[in-house]
Length: 367
Image (cartoon, rainbow, N blue to C red; front, side, top):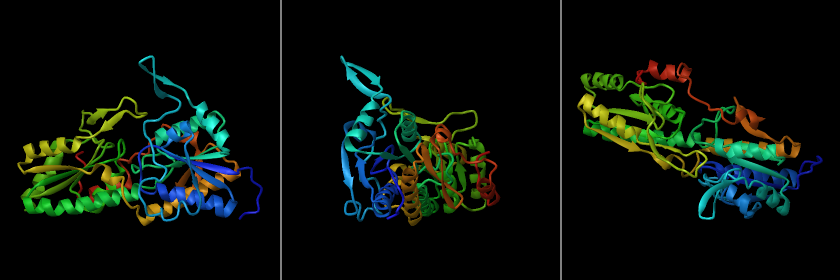
């Protein structure tokens, strides 16, 4: 244990938003670092911000977190529809939204939680910032498979999602070639094309369609026809869920009224497959990878990255550096103010080195 002075006696952990490979690794690292290095108690709030509102916790000790490093998901569970600053409730038979954030303060005080580490994406961290503004001792940890959070080079879960998508591309290659088909794989990423770009390059896709580069479907078809004329009567196209045609819009699957981020994208893969079949004359199929990218065992890279995030989160709490988000800059761990992070999106640079490399090896972006 460090012999340094500390005011923190108990740390709370909360996981919000969608689940993600590596969450348990972060929980494990926070717990082990707090107990082994600083002799600090740790508790976890269950079901995201719902647990903070209800005061439902799980005591985390070395026995409780034993064996969770390779597990996907989060042992604390999560919720992506709970915003305590705009909490949905029923009053007199009507749906209303109230600021119930003070309930979180009451529960932290009652439970003796001196600092709260909040692990999540933009929506979850927005509430983290708002709690810090109201005086809570908050440390943020970025979590998203989309790799779209600003001020951190890589978020844990991204490497696992890319690995899952790459394996899917490998498998689609064989059936595409066997049946002389166009296979379109739709991957997650929301408004950023990182998963599509890196998985598409690693899997040898013939075209990659991402939100940052609006595509012309006829240019994509031209690429496939070139392959067809060269004797390759199949193609594999990777489509980010937020991809959109030139002078077109993203495809919205549905709107979720009570979610902090109500837009649910989906369906662009099927749209692209149908149009390419009409233009090229090859049978086309669409595969939506969906939540497979978010589940299962994290890669070794994500386990190690998540562990580093968790350790630094505890260090920042002990040092009293609240209102900060842990970040990765190059090869080194760092931190940045939550005020700077919120509302910013890390997008693919259309003129960046990775896009340029993909184009140089013959991958089409439809531009």
